[in-house]
Each structure stands twice: as structure tokens, then as C-alpha cells.
Length: 106
Image (cartoon, rainbow, N blue to C red; front, side):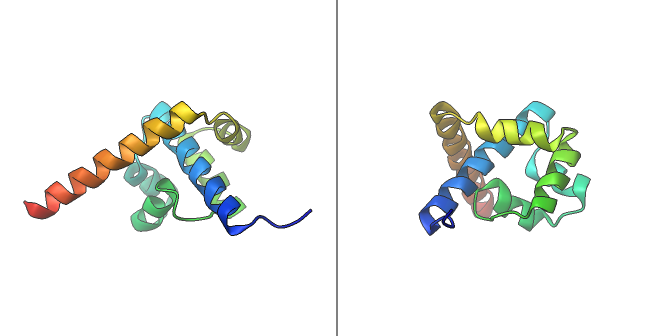
């Protein structure tokens, strides 16, 4: 089996971010709250939540535990990502970026 190409890795990382967004939404978490729950730096969690960071297995398990779900359940979120989920996630990201830009101006 050949290793994932760079493009495939980006797609997988993005899909994980979408899955994480869905899981956090269901658990009533946000990246900051989850970072605090599992003892991770907020900035590191933001990178993960935005699909900019590839994760180790131990980080994935810590995230699942922090959300109060099993690793299998987190994997099910990953496997269940749809195009509609991706679109919703992209809209969420745009809103977050706009809010961040607005807060910088204030």
C-alpha cells in the first residue's frame, strides 16, 4: 500500500475537521472548551479544528475522550461526513473568520 500523497493528506485532515465540528456540535463543545478539557493548547486545537493539523492517534483518542465518546464513535463521524456537512463547515469557518476580523477592528 502506498503512502498518502500530500493532496490526499489535506483531504483527510479536512474531513477530520468536519467530523470534529459535527462531534463538537453534538457534544455542545467548541475548540476552546475542548482544548481546556483535554489539556491541549488552544492554538493547537484551533489548527486541528480548522483542518490545518494532522493528528497522532493519541491526540485523536484524547479528543474522543474529551468529547465523552469512544474512538469508534469519532471514527463514525469521520466516515459519515457528507458534502452537505463540508458545506456547513466551510460556512462556519467563513463566519468565524469574519468575526475574528471584526474583533481586530474593534
